Length: 442
Image (tube, rainbow, N blue to C red; front, top):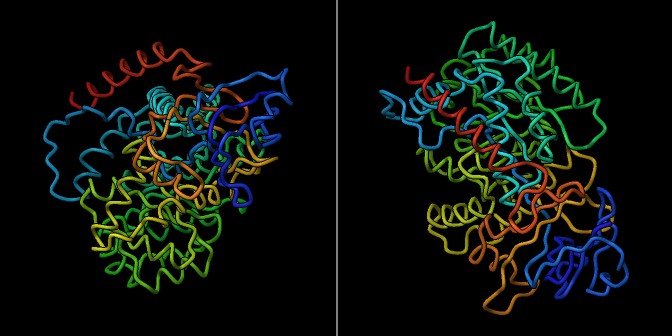
């Protein structure tokens, strides 16, 4: 049993949203009790973590990651001078993934998971690509997930871009891993059918995906991220992207559509009517010069819309900060995004996660998953349940997190990782990155 106390508790439970001097009691992988500071005395024999007056809250969830991008930081690719989004994809990201083997994929996953833990993220949805070695790649990521303790929903990016043989291998990797995850009873691993985007998926590939996908899972796919995706769909299929996905039975409550920049009101209505989920990645959209999606409208329509990072960062507060500014700027409305983005991060991300994981996530309440973080934030102004989001947005970042607990396991305490040798792991990652870079640049 573990008690986290001596801090301000932000529960994300509307029945008891804020406790000025509170405590959270964990029993195994579940929350046993949430309440006032008296719980420390009630469970006097339990292990104790002192929040030191900081903030105790649910761990973060990231609903769109790219583990395969972990070794890109600082990389300069010879001849790379992108003029548009397709140049960025082919010149950088597809170049990287074509040089990844399973050893490098696992190292990329270890680096990502270390950063997740240090930023208070205990659940992520990853969209993987490693066309240098496809078979076994999701299982390599799972090994890293188990070693680090981060809950993960994984998929492989099916695409026609490197030919039919690799497309079929990607389909098989998704199916093999999804069936493996469905048989797993740990509630720490899940699988989806990963698909790149409409413009790299032929009708023949769509048909194979529909035939092979297990009924219990949905798809994780990039949608209308660049204008080229829409233009290609209109030219080749005489329909818009979301309509094409509907025609191939891809939409539904377990499917996650990333980006959705170039979707129109009809497509938004179709996403809503099918109960399909979406995820917004503000930094990626801005960095790739792809445009600003109608995310506020998606939220206003009641569509489950999560917040992701697309591999740009592992800091969910950073992603929140950028989304907050992006939509204010884009809409010329200083009131935009104040309520919508925290709703995405704290409510919708949990909804998305709980369509794949059984234990309730994203909330501190009895019976929910024992996923808790402590931030060392001591407010310079009054802090309460009504203004906590403002304090997080303007006063914290991911590195404010000093303790991270996932599934009842303390992964980091006082900024020190508990179950892995961070220095040794990162030394291996740096060595792997050097090998990858040499492979890419000759």
